[in-house]
Amino acid sequence: MASFWEIAIKVSSGKLITVSEPFVKAAETNLKVLDIRAEHVSAVQHLPFRHRDPFDRMLIAQAQVEKLTILTADRNFAAYDVMLA
Image (cartoon, rainbow, N blue to C red):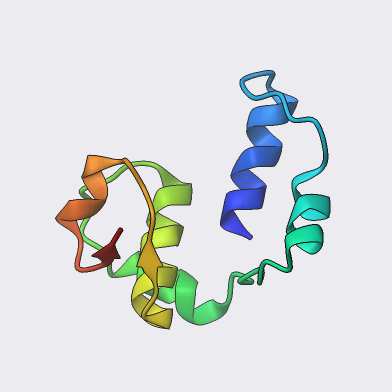
């Protein structure tokens, strides 16, 4: 959900142009959408402040809580205890 939220902001600000709605694409590909839950928000609070982007911090927290791997080219993610691909 954090990724969709960030995409929506970038589309509305003109920084990103998409052909279709991201939610529609997720439904078409059977992607599982991970909701933002209280335990994810709590995990953000306890993260070291090495990355300033709030969306990326949420993704890191979710990956830690859910024990997921993050696919990213952002080198700042390596500063956290999270599996990267």
